Length: 313
Image 1 (cartoon, one colour):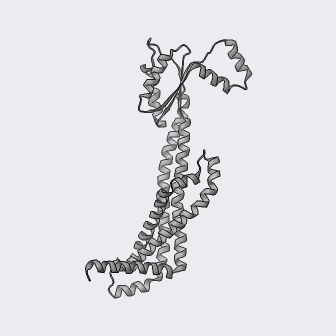
Image 2 (tube, helix red, strand yellow):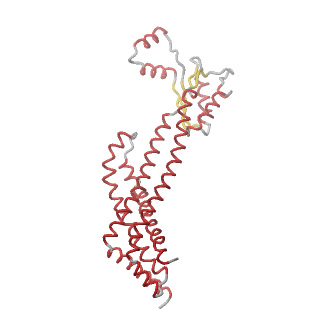
Image 3 (cartoon, helix red, strand yellow):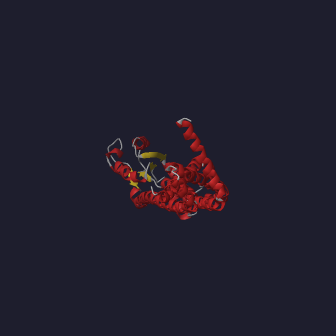
């Protein structure tokens, strides 16, 4: 028999023994799979939490902007020139122009229930409001540089006179700074939480698989005495760990279907339109790959680490 044939024969025997041990120790296997499901559910929840956090932060980012109000007599050509310069900045994502008439209409709509303000506008007989540019940066931390640009000589009219009445960046600066700090803190917290939960999950899975190996310690000792190689002894237990991971991963994915469906209305109503069930379906392959791969890696690695004691490696 060639070396390749011997290797394949041993591999088949190891896999077959692994499956046999999985079914033979039914109660322990069930307990291990259930514990592994808890582990993988935590990993899945981290994915969902990250998606919810990202959606919430994007929504908050969209609510932060800068409004540039021009003096009523500013020429539209000068305003559009400034708009074009702003759009050329790498920090700027979108610039929206509202004419004086559009600004007045929006003002009247906001104060539709305040007759005194509307009466005051009528008494003036003319539009006292200037045109407005609404600016959205690519990142909240970039609004400071946009504000610096607006305060520089780039915003002068063709006559060399500034036509900007006011910039509300400084009124929004506190909110912008808080949002930037929140985003940075959320990124750090998410990474730390992922690492912490992964370690806890690994410890739980390790101890559960150790129980399986403890049951077979006499069998391991006999195999060691008759000269079986370390890889041959470890193999079936690694296969069992992989089976735990795959079975637990599939069951976890199936469990997430009714849970996310039940929570979909709740998340849509309270989390800025985020439908967790739709997210799960649209990203199913990615989530499934992550969960099953995590289960396989945790199961296999836990088996290798747990059996080292009995092999005295």
